[in-house]
Length: 278
Image (cartoon, rainbow, N blue to C red; front, side, top):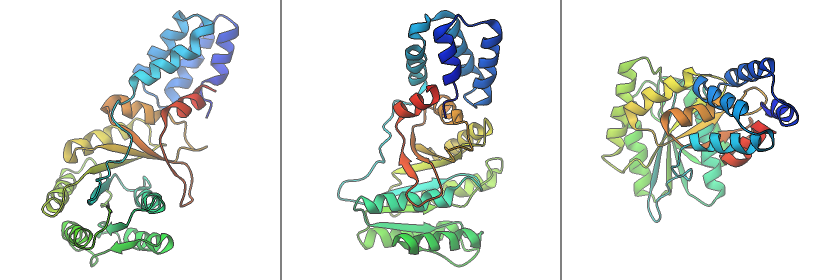
């Protein structure tokens, strides 16, 4: 990414001019890092000695991030249930399948549930992914009750000794309260069978500040435990991941870095920040 690197290099050699600072502010805001964070970084540029600038900005950004664990909350000797939620078009179904592949590769017995029953294409997509990576998929009839499909999946996972149950929920508009209520119902029904250990929100890295509003409403409905950010590659400026963490104190656990089945990586903030500043 190297969003800020050219400016920091310039500032480390010379005193920042007003024009340079204004251009840097513009770059920060356009990176979707958020207006408040952008102003705090600009203030550092104005005040900090040039030789300390990169270290100071690195520490300031780190202070914005969640202190919660970024590890998936896997249950030792029992079933781990993960709801994957988000709006349509964010890469939710693909991310669910990639997470299944990551867990299977680590030796876990994984079951997928295709709970987006109102979009046949989403169900077909998950089934195709399941066949590709060698993971079983539970599906229901088209337009069937998503909560009922999830109940069947949870029952199968518990009775047949699966390690991880991954549920691809229906993509939902965060502005539609009835759809958000349905998501709450899905969680309650699953918990009649087994606890929900994680609720991961999938955020499209190109969404911008609207992604924060989406995450906030989802968190109010189903108590999010973490995020997956997709499209962290040449198509996105990347700041939204940091901005969302700061706003919601919600740990980013995985990032999607490409289209391949293995292109879901555990998020490590240190190299991510270094790349922003490189």
